[in-house]
Image (spheres, rainbow, N blue to C red):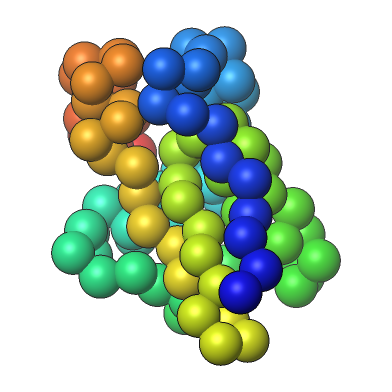
Length: 101
């Protein structure tokens, strides 16, 4: 199975996370993942006002910043929010962003 690279929880950087969350489309993705926290969501499940290639870019930015985890399941990619890692590293940040969104 193909693996995607994810930063370790201890390597998450506040600047990277804040930069990833600065975009309204990416906040929309994070909000949707937070609402369905116990379920991984495929990329096509997100109704976003952007092209497929731009959607792919947004998911990559979130993954590389450590905000989401992506895993291949068959030919699709499942997305989950890395809430425990984010809450452990930056307590209250994700809740503040989701509340403001």
